[in-house]
Length: 557
Ligand code: ADA
Image (cartoon, rainbow, N blue to C red; front, side, top):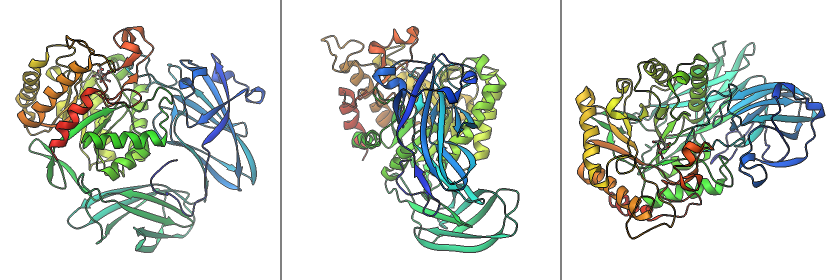
């Protein structure tokens, strides 16, 4: 899996990315598939999305992937960065894992002898009860496939499953590390901790059934991470015969007096939303594209990106850690209806997805906010307990970061008491009102939030924007022209930067154009079948608004 640092030096890890055997099985029912009889008549890139390739473009159905791996005897773990949307993993014909969700890492384990093994993955991109988190009406094209990297890990009976590193005090240079492990052996085990290649501690621990060990460490050479000075450290833990490294940054995020603070300093977030989608690669983001996106964010002068509307590629987060770009990381969601939101199977799937999101992303210092459920029924009585449960789970998993969600209509929301940061999506000058009315609408939202009694909570405008067909202009400056989009966004940015101190953050909708869903209802309001509110197009070519926003964002520096 492409990362900016090696996670294992001792544990044998084999990357399985490459070209796998492939078969598109269309309407087939996964319960009826006879693996032994499957003919693999094609090939597919891993990572990749089959329905983004010209051959299978727009096809929904079951697909089978196959590869062969070399094994040395013992416990094997296949780690998948993400599979869209639902899958079953087979090892030499035996089912070893089923997973639904997409955008999150998971693994499948089995014991194996020395030699070779066949790995088959059945992948389904249809919308049905197998994957309650995906819905056809989302305003993005839900691509299918093994969309992030795959690795084979050879595990010791006692092995590390994860490290969670939290800053306890920047001033004291104090962190807490939780080491999650599996496989308690009889007797003690050697535990060693290094940071940046220097020994921090060595001891013998008595492992128990709890599956985790927590240590508080004072590491005098740590330097604070901030957006301006994004200093990073790497912690390496060895437990018995296994090891794991994680990169982290010493920093504290909090909210106080209507501001988000990093290491006690108020920050003003200026940035964009970003989808991980590309016309040729779907949700599978080649490294070159991720590097490109971060460079374009830097060029824009942005210090903030909202991962709309699902967990982001870990390499993108690594690059944001290095670039000092602060990130809102959110669980999958887009205008789920009330009946969906209140279905227990959905809530359970969201909880599992949130846990997977946090486990994979919790050590990135760039993530300063967790979010859930974009534009869902936070305006309804029925939605309230669901928001309470999901946000509550987030706080349990990570008490060190503020939580939020993007409200579809701030004027009619019922869940703001549940969050640390109030976030509002709004489209004045596009879905309602006009450009000159934008400052008044933003002020109206601020005044409303304050009147509800939440003046002490930071406020983020989490979406605002306008469609622009790339290259399109007319002498009227009509809707869909680059001129109109640039005018609207400069009005927004000028008001947030110069005229409105109450707003702590702005995420323009959206960095790049992206394909919308197949539903006619949406596609008919999206020229080219593309949500073209990007300030760059889907091939990353800047529109006029990019330059106009850049001029303003850069002024802040
Ligand atoms: C909403 C939604 C976005 C996008 C946007 C739009 O605010 O959160 O995902 O669909 O509207 O372009 O209309």
